[in-house]
Image 1: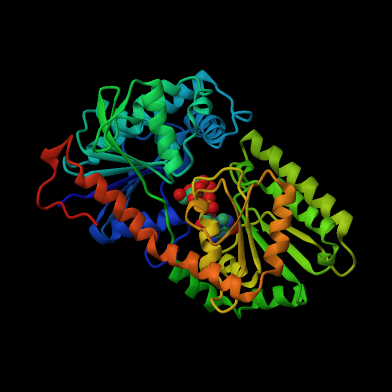
Image 2: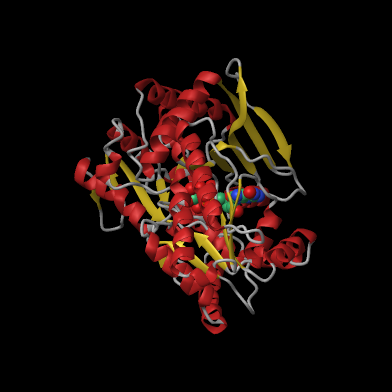
Length: 471
Ligand code: GDG
């Protein structure tokens, strides 16, 4: 029977019986746990010298294989090309992107080394599923190492339009490398189209009647697989926490004020600065909300050794101080800006206790927080989601108030509308969104991807036997 091998930059620290954090970890771990397999990637440790073989740890049927990275690899591959070049550019922030040849060389070197390190662990019929922008050339590196397994790739972040992608000097090599995968999956149709448009317009690629892409001498399939959540688990979790001390304390502090809630990794792509300004505009244009609405922004620090993340952190501190200085009084602090990570169940109960979920990234592959906010709502009295049109989630969550995150007035108006929305209208929007969350949950995301990776035997038919029974 084929095994599933997951490859991602970081391997989630998973211990059987302990709750999992994060959508990706839950989804892929579920698949591995059921059928058995390997999860391979960086341990998160910096080491003096690259190990000859990965550390391996068994949890049930799952083997976790992890490697450390040297300081140079970490700086060039992870902090450099992945997070200071690809991340900003793929989020349309080419103004924040920088390119260093030696970082790109480090990125290619680490991808090649990871492929060589994985190779001895593989069996010929293993199905390999690679995740995210750190590993764009990993499939090509596997082919160069002589691996003939079926290899699929899923991009969790947006794929930019050609003119933006072309600001990354080695764009041709990167896209050519992606063509070595058998299946390339995206969060939304616009992301997929950006990729195929680039191939057709800039790389002489062709799309045949079956939707297969022929480019750079390769044949690959592309697909759209919006990542989901488990909405009913979140609903149950949020319900269970509703009367816990932290929520009772929060409610006591709010004194019947309405609550607007946001949770994001501290990242410039999440649009927090514009969001703070929209909240300030709301208090200006609708002064009736002064003293009656509070806004909590939870923003745990992330990638804090990358320069642009230090800058956005300072800007947010200044803006939060400005708003609170301007509007606070002895009994009310309008904005609570918290740089702390909370337990997942605490976040879900905060979502449930709030009247508005304010999720306005400038660009986002999907945005799981938007989905989690909806799932955590009490069905009889749900809150309203205010959602950026540039989050992948906006393609599915039609019941949200969709806003343009660059339009501060528009966001303030949407907040005003959300705070005043009658219960019946809120329920209708909520039911519409819950339906779509249930129709495309996390298992469906995973199963659809693996089905397509397994089903299209055009390139490596000899690997697919009747015994191949992946989920
Ligand atoms: C990437 C793509 C895509 C946040 N703060 C805390 C915490 N979180 C959890 C949230 C959510 C997850 O982290 C964040 O997921 P997002 O989807 O919102 O954003 P990224 O981290 O940028 O994820 C994104 C995703 O991959 C999946 O494909 O949707 O577009 O950028 O689950 O709840 N969790 C805990 N404490 C916190 O303080 N426990």
